Image 1 (tube, rainbow, N blue to C red):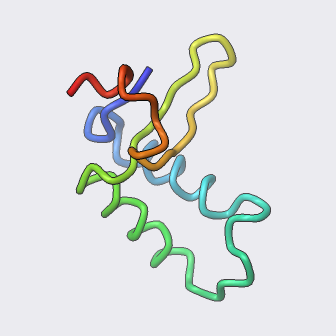
Image 2 (tube, rainbow, N blue to C red):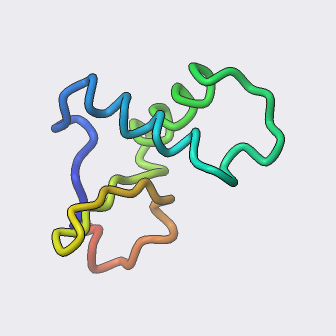
Length: 76
């Protein structure tokens, strides 16, 4: 299930993005400041390049590139 990013409270969205960009293996030695990485992901969500995927079975949210999500989930 996809969750539109603009339906989340701003603080919730920021925490979700921060969690994503600070996970082990996501920085690959990149020294880019946290706020810059957060803004890059926010921009990708706003442009529709990234989406928020919610798994109701686990209750987990993940960020994914739109191109990596099954077409039937996109509804377009």
